[in-house]
Length: 363
Image (cartoon, rainbow, N blue to C red):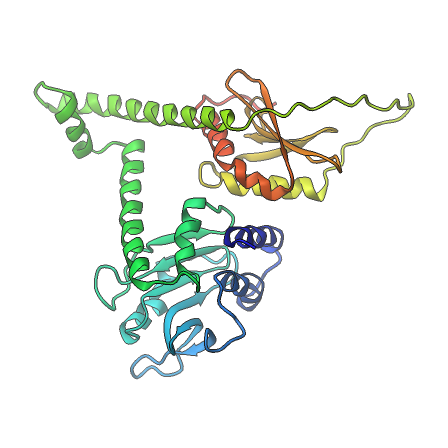
């Protein structure tokens, strides 16, 4: 099974069980050990994975790391584990921080609650753990580009020099994206002055800077919306609609009352779409509304903001459908729920298009 397929299978398990996991030990057994195994390391081979690795820190004896990944008898990665749902704030990194100073072979420390994985290194100062992770991976929001980076940490692909080079690029690219997002939401004076330096030839008075701040924000948002629409059109163009022959409904008795029953498969489909959308919209804004024929997945519980429909009631053929900008339904066949991840870009683009629109009343 491919690496990404292993991760997606584990993600489905996590989405089903995370509310049932109440302890750190249960989290390690159910989520973290399978994750380490997906990286290609034998969790039952002490030459590869050592649980409760003793990492004495100077005079502080008995310190133990939850898992140490070994290579040539030396630890190369430490896993510090918390229970599912636990906050992974700065206060939780202190133990990992101490380990970097006493284990010179250690270059990667992972803090995790079984759902989110934060990857730290010592990119700024040797043997001093950075304060910010170079990679953050969410098992309920699997992104293909991050899977490619994570794959570098697998046993078969592990190359420390390449990992450190990629980690450095990831860390600073993440900071650049943060700065861009910050200026998208609220352009700083310095950013506006830079824009004015290439787009405005007049005197840069404070009044003009304030005016350009609004102009810059609107232009920035319009640019992002244009890119979203381009991606949506491209995604729709690469997935031709499937011609589906409508089946005539069987006649029913006059007193029969059709009922809608949401199946477990529909719930799982909804959870997968919801996890795909975590990157672009708050999860609490995603709703499902079942019908006899399909499951609607909506933004803000508004039918006019239908992100997609899942046709999962047939045993023979299953479909996902989305609507283009002309409100035409485009239906595509899927083999299994895992195929929903293949439509992640189109799903995100549709949601982002609705997020950019003015609020509408729920229906």
